[in-house]
Each structure stands twice: as C-alpha cells, then as structure tokens.
Length: 252
Image 1 (cartoon, rainbow, N blue to C red):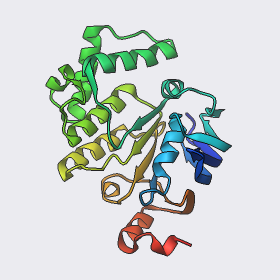
Image 2 (cartoon, rainbow, N blue to C red):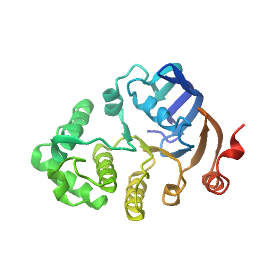
Image 3 (cartoon, rainbow, N blue to C red):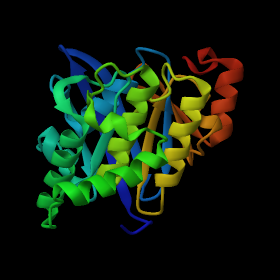
Image 4 (cartoon, rainbow, N blue to C red):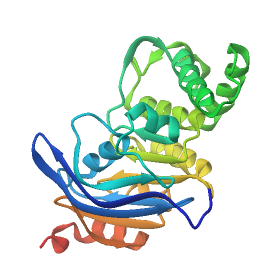
C-alpha cells in the first residue's frame, strides 16, 4: 500500500454500548507503515475503540465512519474485516478447548489465502511455515499440539497471539493491552516480534494504560483518550510525560 495513503481512517466516530455512549467523536488517521499508540485510564474507551474497528458484537456505531484501505467497513462482519487484513490481540486471550494450535492456525491462514485467491497450504508445507514463525516468538514446537491457549500462562498466551499475527500477516494489527500481565522477558519478546513485523506496508494501533511497552517499541504518534475523546496527540515524549504526571492535567 502507498505510504502516503491512510491505512485506517476514523471520522467522527460515536459508539454506544448498552445504550450508553462510550466514544464521542473520535477522529484518527493511520498511514501505511505507521504505529500509533492510544493511552488512557481504564474506562476511557480504549477497548471500545478496538472492538468497534474489528466489528465486535454489541458495540453500536451511532455516527461516523471507519475506513480501512479506502473502504468503509461498518457493514462488514468481523470475519470479513479479519480476512481483509485487520488483526486484534486481546487483553485476555481466548481458550479454545479441543482445537489444537496447528489446526486453528492452518484453518485461519488458509481462509485468508482462499479469500485472496492464493493456493492453500497442505499440512506439511504449513508445518514448515509455522515452525519458522515459532522461532521468532521463542516458542517450543510442543505448543502446536496443545489446544489453543489451554493451560497457557499469561505470557504464553500473548506469545501465541504474536504467533497468530506472524502467520496471518495482517496489514493492520491492533494490540489491545498486550503488555498486561507480562513479565519483562515476555514483554521484550513480544516487542521484538512487533518491531520485526512492522514495515512500510503494515500499520499498528497499540492500546495501553502504561508506557512500559513503549520503551521497547517506537510509536510514531501517541494519542490520549479521556472520556471517549482524543484530548491530546504527540510523539513518544507524550507517553513519558503521562508516566511522570499521570492523566489529571489533561482532564477538563
């Protein structure tokens, strides 16, 4: 994608959850190759924003638009948005009992290949492909045989999500509180994966409460979300300022 084009464009977005307005007019533009960070306290609307972009149920867009690669995605189902190139990691990754990692990943990757009109992976080719990605997140091949996230520690679940991202190769990756509950070693591995994956045609939206993740990844723009509105945007230094001062100086 052209680097001067917007990968994601959000215009005057209003979102309600259970008839209560959570987002009140969000405007955001992320170009191809850019990494933006959204910071805010719990309840500020950070996760509502990511859920609205991915089309999660019960997040009702009442006004505005979400445009991905020049096309409005409001009418698209969540799986269509994923196939189009949007990926989201969760603060609390889902456990899928009875479905092993290899089967799950191969089905997801092949669904995307089919959507693009590409040849799907057979079992042997996929195994070779996924093992090369395992090395990047420092995971043992034994995890491929286990049910998705079942019995995984918090750090293992996050690495597993990073593995999913590397396999699916989305153009827009939304990392929602990915640093939550991670020890420093796991945080460094996840950050390394993000930094290695990012290139001129892939964009990131990183949602976080603290700036410790931003010590290891370099956002191009930091936005502060308070009460459903972006109240300030700036460079990485804004995250350091928030760490030092907190959020109260930005609250009206």
